[in-house]
Length: 286
Image: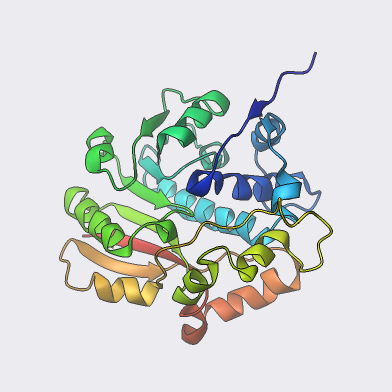
């Protein structure tokens, strides 16, 4: 007898967690996949949601972004094998299962509708806890033990929050968690302008091609993004904060095919391109 699937009734920003889940699941299923995920097939199959109808062709770049974060977390765990990773806006991300070394302590932080679904589909354990609150609510910080090393991540989140509030959050965390790190992805200001109001570019990002045969009335459109920035801008904004030691740009790892294996690392290494492409930003606390 088939297990009933769980309906994902999400709207607005919480619904955004289903798009990267779809892209990771489809990538993991490929015979030449660069992102093997031990739990995502069962998770994907257990959700009642019209993934393809809403999102169109899966986007390789979202799976590649997840792999880039995986590599940074693995680098952190090589130095702090018993360390803590706090994943802000964790949604239905399965990163814990991909990087788990058997010792890491994981804390998923998200809004109630997201954590309710996560508890049903990806229940916590003694090393993987779920905290329900906004990433901007400082109360999650009271839940964290940073004595064995701490990495805070925010994957696909900060572009939907007010930039001043995000920078204040980073500053607060830096002052509280000395020696920790924070990793997040940022989109350029031009992309924020284009996605405002669900523009045509937003629709094409979802669907993958302009002549998709699917009903455009059911096609997913990104919620308007709020904050566009770059590694350089973040570095300048935090330059006078003594609790911040350094701000680094983290290049996207090479992927599959000519564009993602050959061109993407080259383009990502040039300063002019870094100002106009999405950035992965690593903030080191003093």
